[in-house]
Image (cartoon, rainbow, N blue to C red; front, side, top):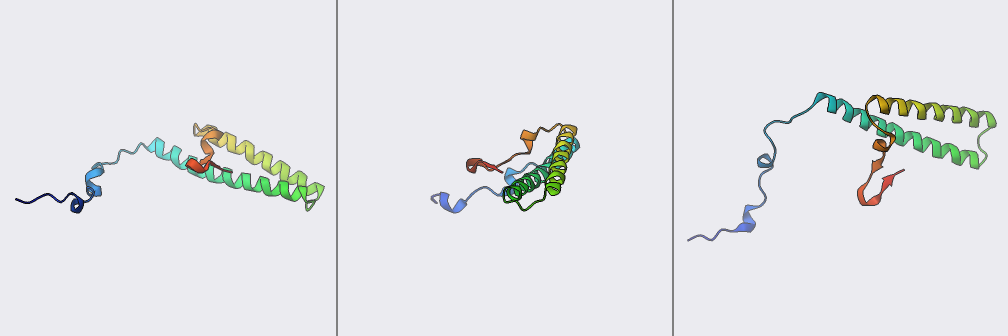
Length: 105
């Protein structure tokens, strides 16, 4: 009589857990890719905005530079909203959530 050694069996092979086919909806792939790209662009936009505010607070930008940066950031913000809406996304969808660490930026 052989006793079964549970510890030596280990977890089931990965192939046993995966479906034979991956059901991919092309519309969802497009939306997922758009969400990824827009999330990264939103992250960079927020970083640029924070850097511009720091530079303004330290007086390292001229009035003309402050004006140009403000206009550029405003236009980028508007385009981000337009593109998110085009893919059925909200600005809330573009936040980077890090689980227990909270949101990034």
